[in-house]
Length: 100
Length: 269
Image (tube, chains in turn blue, brown):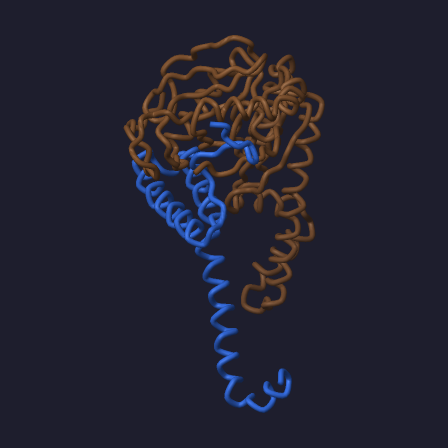
C-alpha cells in the first residue's frame, strides 16, 4: 500500500492531487489578500497626508474615507469568517475569568 | 471640536443595541481619586471620567459595545480626550478603539497591569511627543543636485548639446547618477535633522514613509522643559531648507510612539 498504490494509481490520482494543490495555493493567496488590512491602512495614511498638505478639502476627504472604511470592514468580516483576530470590539484581560 | 459634521452613531454596531454600559478607554494616568473631564468623549460627546484602582486611573467614557471605525472624526475625538488629559497628567495612551464590556473589566486591567503601568508612567513623567514629517519637492531637489554635482551637470550638458547623437546609455547613466545623488541627499537631510534634534530630545523613532515625496516620518520624545528649545530648533531647520523641503510638524502628543506595553487582552464574548 502507500507508495505502491500511489505509483499504480498515479495516472488517475495525479491530476486530482495537482488540482487540489493548486486550489489550496489559490485559496491561500486569496485568503491573504482578503484578510490583509495593511495596504488599506497605508491608503488611509496617504489620504490623511493629502488633507494635511491641503491637496484635498474636507468633503473630498470624507468621500474617500467612506470608501476606505468600507474596505476595512470587509477585511474585518473576512478575518472573522476565517477565525482570525480583529482589531476593535470589546476586550478583556486574558485569563481573568469572571467570578460572577 | 472638529469642523466635520458630527456623526451620532458609530459606523458599525456589532452587538445588540444594549444600553451604553461598555467602557471606551482613552488612557491610563496616575490619580487616586475620581475625576470628570467633561462631555468630550467619542460617539457624540459622552462624559469622560475615571475608573480608579489605588493610585491608577483609567480615563473612560460609556459606550455601546461596538467597533469604532478609524474615521477622522472618531480618531480626533480619541485624540482630543488625550490632549485634554495631557494638560494636567502624564498618560499612557490606549490604542484607538479599545472597548471593555464593563467597569469591572477595566478594574481587572488596572489591577493586573498595575506594575507595568506604574513603571511606564514613571519613565514617561513630563515627556511629550512631537511628530515630524519631511517631504521634498523632487524637481527642486533634482535642480539643486544638477547645480552642485559637476559630473551630473557635465553629462547633462553633453546630452543636451548632442541631442540627436546622445545615446540611450548616456541618458540611462544620467538617470542612475541622479537617482543615487537623490538618495544620498535624502539620507543627508534626514541625518542632519536627527543630528540637530538629538540634544533637545530624549529619543526618536522613524516610521515608514507615506507616499513617494516623504523622506522622513519620525516621532520625537521630548522633555517638557525642552519643549521650547525643540520647537525653536525645528523652526530653524525648516527655515534653512524652506526652498527644498516641506516640514509637517505636529504635537505635543502623548507618547503614542514610545509606550509599548503588550496588554494580554482577549475578545470579550
